[in-house]
Length: 110
Length: 114
Image (cartoon, rainbow over all chains, first blue to last red; front, side, top):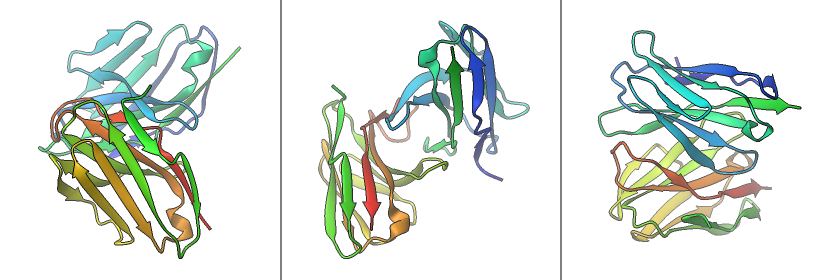
């Protein structure tokens, strides 16, 4: 089983719609979770950290479900500029080694 | 301007060539990383340096050789590469290694081995 798994997509989303996707992780001892965004042919950039209680940043909401070992990202009122690949990142050991998922591609269409 | 700068942005090299990738960070971070990103695959951690000492080497072939002369600079020396080594090589830095801190990435070097 992969340490971090994501649906590769693409998720084709009409502008203004809501899209949500999950990421599962295998190490139940993982403590830190992040969502990074990577635009085509660009470097990954931190979108948001994921906290145990869930957190929101504008149109983006991240949730953590420890019992089922997954995190989720929800994007409301999608913009064309939200088109990107969203990388799930999980720390996999006590040293905080970060494991990246392969990414979920989101395409927002007019 | 990104806090992590990589050069060159693109590199085409033959299998018998020797080249080096350079990474420089202006953020005062103590940890620096090399990642490999192949199409449709997760980022693969290659090397980690913390305070200029290598702390992790994830079974990377010896044809990749890292060098960290100081906390601001990181190199990846390449020699006798294979076509399957063609990928995007990303450098990153973070305040500390092993802490819950954000990793900042450079724009990457897109390497093609012919």
